[in-house]
Amino acid sequence: MARKSKPLPLLENITITDIAAEGKAIARVEDRVIFVPFVAAGDVVDIQLTKKKSSYAEGRAVKFHHYSEKRTEPICEHFGICGGCKWQHLPYSEQLKFKQQQVFDSLTRIGKVELPEINPILGSNKTDFYRNKLEYTFSNKRWLTDNERFSDNQFKDMDALGFHIPGMFDKVLDINKCWLQVDISNRIRLTIKAFCKANKYDFFDLRNQVGFMRNLIIRTSTTGEVMVIVIFFEDDREKREKLLNHLTNEIQEITSLQYVVNQKANDTITDQEIIVFKGTDCIYEKMEELKFKISPKSFYQTNSEQAFTLYKVARDFATLTGDELVYDLYTGTGTIANFVAHQCRQVIGIEYVPEAIEDAKLNSKLNNIDNTQFFAGDMKDLLTADFITQYGKPDVIITDPPRAGMHEDVIKTILFAAPNRIVYVSCNPATQARDLSLLDCQYCVERVQPVDMFPHTHHVENVILLKKII
View (cartoon, one colour):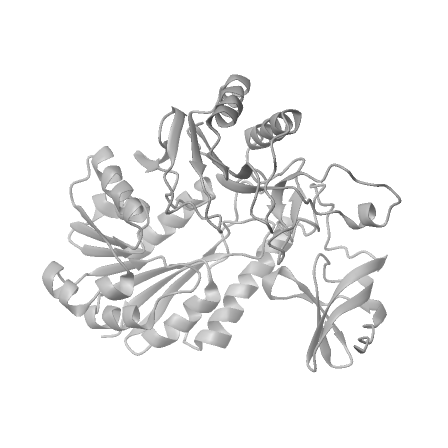
């Protein structure tokens, strides 16, 4: 007979003291750190522990005795459930303060390199409706909130079109209104959902991998263009065209309507054929006088307006005079490469996604830029000493790697290339700090500029200028 696990304790009247990593807050009880989400420093709460280790514990606030003055009213009805916007209960000024501290802590505790004074973080002008891309999931087993689960009601309608509950691949919260993307995104999602419900289209069963409607991707741009990609699991032309025609009739602002039939076990569409149903096969973004093509598989910073701020910082840190050879590592669709091309002699961009490299080339052509070269391949395999010997030693390297940071082989090649300046753009100050410690043998940190791309989350971008030690 299996032993019943001992119930975890309820801690009463506990004061939240600070904000921690991953957007959680901290309380301390008898020398043990307790991580609690969706609370603010100064809140006094009862905490129901959910996990208990020797040195720390995790829990959730089940009762508030006192609300902190460092708190504001969340605007979203889904706050605390969907897993996004975990800091919506904090005033934006407090969010920026914690992000600034996060950058400082990462660089000092992990990097352990000598630092100049860190510039004040550059906040986003928009704190709502700032994203240009959202991905939704259809599910026939929607997530029930605590109020629903503990009520006496019987819920027959279990279809959802929304976001995954964190850590639960088969649980999706049905979204009524999301405050992350301009409101046409909500209109599109609700129009599709209503049509599917009225016509009895099967929402996807994530466990058993059956159903008709699978995913929905919506991309927007500051130019007013709207791309919608509907992902079906079953290939039923009649049902598909009925839905897509209804969508084009109801929402005429859509400029690019595309679809995918994805029958794989995972949701990624990077290896799938994307078919244009109506309109164009892409949308465009503008930055200064430049236009950038965005295809369904292209990466583009999800906060378009703040991306402009980020790239201006990177360009300023590069201090280009017109004579430099610049390497742009992890170039994506060549946004940074084309953004700095007019200020240097030549830019070489490297990216592992072939479709992104094709867009990078098109973006250069679109903007009459003829001093860029782009290469597709795994960074650690492509960026080698032989590559640098063939194409020239860079004067400046701009690198914008994914959250995992740079591979150690890439760092070794950068040290071999020995550029005068390295501009390191990072979406993860922790891995950036780790990489700085490896570059510290030849480079010193000259400037540090945090940039907030994602209000209401704990995520922060950071730009660092490294100068070669003479």
